[in-house]
Amino acid sequence: SKSKDFLGKKILITLGPTQEALDPVRFISNHSSGKMGLAIAEAFSKRGAEVHLIAGPIKGEIPSKFKTIHVKTADEMLEASSAVHSQMDICVFSAAVADYKPANVADQKIKKTGSSLSLSLTKNPDIALTLGKQKSQKQIHVGFALETENEKKNAKQKLSKKNFDLVVLNSLQDKGAGFQSDTNKVTIFHQSGEQKESELASKAEIAELILDQIKNVPVWI
Ligand code: PMT
Image (cartoon, rainbow, N blue to C red; front, top):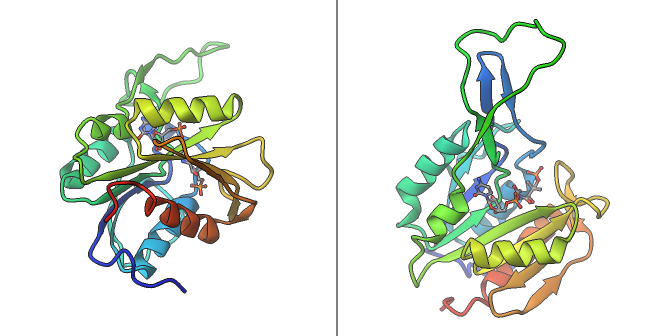
């Protein structure tokens, strides 16, 4: 295996979905399992780094070697991430954050009355965008882009808009890529224009590839 080439580095990883409550029994969420984020955490840990996780609600135990803060909502994920961001060397935004949340959270269970129900949603904060504006010269930000169409164009837009050093594109057009599976297939875009495409591989192997690509970022010393 690789040497401890990330020894002494502090890493922040957001992972899993967020849950946005509608009422005391229901929420809006997505299919993220946290597997991709955990694979990246394992890779960093193996290569000597100190790993901090901000984890949305995911199944299973998170190894205690990671310093983990558990959150439910995008607002909580932003607050927890902001609190530690300035101390971090590298931040990886692998969470699938709900872009919108219910405008109002009902105090009581919403009753089944009419034949249809409209929900009013309001925009959530964008964690990667917010922290991207605070990124220092020495920090590296790695984003993800989960796309279903116009994948490369959308990924490159996210790279520049969110001030990422690199963005990891995974497309739901690729079988075995994205949510829940133990595999992924990615294309990594650098700020420099450089790009690297993977085969379908285990999330552990994809994580190693992402770490190798981080070492090509100019601020890396
Ligand atoms: O968890 P798994 O089941 O293993 O699945 C892995 C994954 C598919 C969730 C992961 O590989 C992935 O693609 N994560 C990002 C999912 C996503 O929401 O992508 P996006 O294209 O909507 O967001 C772009 C980037 O901005 C991401 O880095 C995201 O974390 C970040 N973001 C988005 C919205 C928001 N409000 N805050 C954010 O920080």
